[in-house]
Length: 257
Length: 330
Image 1: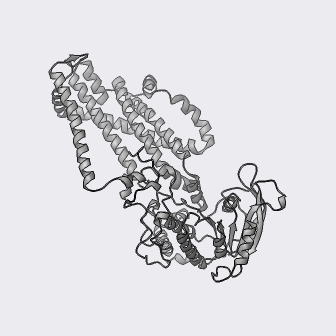
Image 2: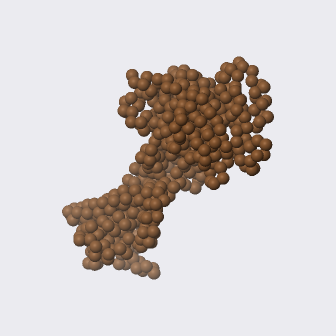
Image 3: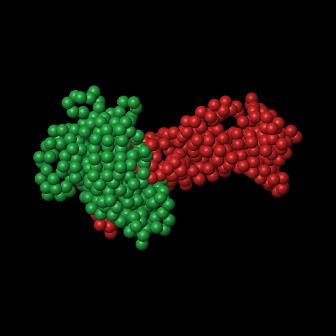
């Protein structure tokens, strides 16, 4: 089986944001962003709504060209989207006319993987996210949680070296969200991809991240109103171990927010 | 189909859950490792679909099932049949009584005469020749209009430069009724046949182009972003997002296009054909053969209805993913 060809652990992508200004129109909301995302780490970006979290992610994905500054992926400048940087959207990212399998096969089809192989790999990932037997369902026939499982499978099926997640569990109820977080941790254990995860949920950030970046209004009133930047970059002690006590860090983040 | 009554949001879904709506998270534990979403959750996440695609899901849920509905179905069929029979009966009555009540029914052929004429014509070869000729003309013109209309609509909807180049021309020609182009078509095309096909094409092209353009421009950006972040280029976006995503709108244009194509093919045949249902109908008029005229009219009606139904059917098959009442049974 050629599954292993795509499964082999490839080093995660290192991302560098170098003096980045990013936003829509001529007056970018995010300014002067300097950040290094190490290969294979899970970096969580938190911030209030409107703080530019999603904008940052779209920049990393290559969907939004920087206003100034540079985004580097393994040292090469990002000028557009690439299959190596997969993105998971908050919801509705699935193509509604494609079945679960059709959606999961999509990145493989784009890469020109032969049909039979495509099916086998997709099948495996559909099982892995707990949707075995739902291959032929259309997205409208699935619940929100199930649709996000499909998005997860679709993003990871092509073995990307970086996964960008834009509040993927933001519209799920608490119980489904907890399930999805567990599933994500489970799946991430088998990959070495770099993950940039955007959320407004501090507990989610503490559970998933190696490091947490807090976005918010620029510090010290140095920039005009409406601009945001990085307020803090914090290390998470004992990452992804639910037993670790992180109340101190939690308080610190809430203070920054 | 389910236009106004179904605008309600899915949140108003009545308690009776339609079979095909969110099938609650996997009920039986799937064999895979992580457990599926707990069955307790489904009400908390309604299907999140862009509003334009939500039409009808509430209506689907509201459709009563079982014997009550079937009885109502039978009743409405009875009413429909009775309505047609009543109209034909009235026609028969007025014509046999030679009624002159403002309108002069004394000269109008009765349904019985028309039926007799139809039976006679059905036994002649020329009836089928006319039929085939008209169908070939409309299918050729319509197919050309569909292909070029969809192509032009996508080009203009996606590319600003293509819009700059094409839109002024299109907007100048669009208000001219296709039938008004007959003199020019006769002048330009070496044969009548080509002229008639051109008129049919010109009639159907604009509705198809315009609705394609609107459908393309109304597409949510998210789907395109998704395909691009998976490594897809322009070609992938075109085939995987733009075409399938604008199909519901495109089919609206195809339906309208087919309607006007019939109007124009029949009119063009009346003016310049040597065969075809329109030509035959006009000829019947010139020899004061009124039953023949009405047989021609009925033939056109049936053909138009069949082609419209074919497009409707094809459209529904290709857009089954839409959360609409009829399709949600899978």
